[in-house]
Length: 245
Figure (cartoon, rainbow, N blue to C red):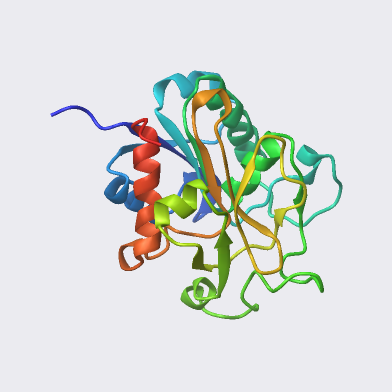
């Protein structure tokens, strides 16, 4: 049996008990392995001990996941912003985007990962997606349960002829919305794949240096086994890793 492609999944700096830990929620890994049919390796965010240049040649693609932390605004020439921040993840994730693209390997993003890729390629973020008169509320109110947070939904319109519209076979999806930040200025070279009703960009794609970049602001890994659209998203990633997209 031939080997499956290997997906790197970025880890975050967390605290487990009283100790620092490199961690990623299992739902990202499990759903990718099941629906994309890939093997997976966790990539630690420890820039003092390794570089993205060492890791990229050993992976077939990278998945930058969601996280409670935010990208430091200094990376997109802004000031202020609310944490928590994860400087180790910023360093590894942003440099991995560049290294994987240089190596013509796919780059995938979910939520924070969607924001990281945009920043790595020269875009900016806005930090008011749950408290702006211009936008619908993109995060559930404070105080709801964890499950209810992911039940906060809105529609997105898929760009006609886009990669996602073709993969899903439809023009609109209902997606969960669990983010306080979003795209401010889209990075050069990225093509809009989906927008929310308020015009906020919810997905984009590109093919720099021949390999696909695919990222979404929502969380398709959440309960993907019960959501055919979410499962289809990960099947798309699997096809992209096999050069079929």
